[in-house]
Length: 314
Image (cartoon, rainbow, N blue to C red):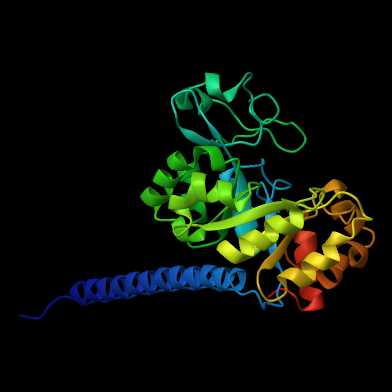
C-alpha cells in the first residue's frame, strides 16, 4: 500500500504548524523574560544611591495620548520606555479601589458627583474623558486592572494610597505586584513607623519632604538614621530657598532625589513649561545642580528625548 501524496502533504502542514507554534511560544516567553529583566533594571537603578542614570516618572500615565489614570495611558508610558508610572487611587461606595485623581467624577468621566457615592458597577458604565474633555471609549480601571497592566513592564508609584493601604496591599498580594510598587507619604518617620510599620519591609516607601517646612532637614536626617529610604521626593516652591543644594550633599550616595517638574511650585520654577524653551535651566539644573535622579513629568516623551541625548537614560 502506497500512501497518497495528500498524506505527506498534510503531515508537512502539521509539522509546519507545530514549528510555528513552538516559535510563537519561544518568542512570547522571550518577550516576557526581557520585560521582567527591564523592570529589574529599573528597580536596581532605583535602589542604587550612586546611580548616574535619571529615571522618568509619567504623571497619571501618558495622559497626552490617552485619558489620565487609564490603562491606555499606562500602556503608552510603557511603550515609550518610561521607568515609573504614577497613578492615583480612590475608593468607591462598595469599597472597591479605582484609578482617579479627583474625589469627584465630573472632570474626567461622563458621571457626576463624589466617587464615595457610586458603586464600581455603576462607575464601570461611564466613559473617561481625554485631556481636552472629549468623551472616549475608555472606562475607569480598577487598581487591580492597572497593576496587571503594569506588571513586569514598569514600576508604579501609588498616590492617595497611604490612608487606605490595608485595602491596597490586599490587591498587591492578589496580583503579586508588591515588588514593583513605590509608596509615599509626607509624615515624619515616627508617624510612619506607627501607622505604616507593618508594611515597611514589604514595599518601597518614599518620604515626601517639603523644604518649606522648617523641620525639613531634621525629618530627612531622622529618616536616614531609622529607615534609609531608597529615595526622597523633594518639594520646594521658593527659588531662593537655600536648602536644595544642601539636601543634595546630605543625600549624596545615600538616597536618590526625586523632583516633580509638573508645575513651578514643586521645584522652584524649574518645571516642564520652562523645559520646553530651556531644558538646561529646568531638567539640567535639577539634575546637575540639585542631584535629581528621578523626575516626575507631564512631558515624558520630551524629557526622555532630552535625557537620552545627554546620556542619562537608556
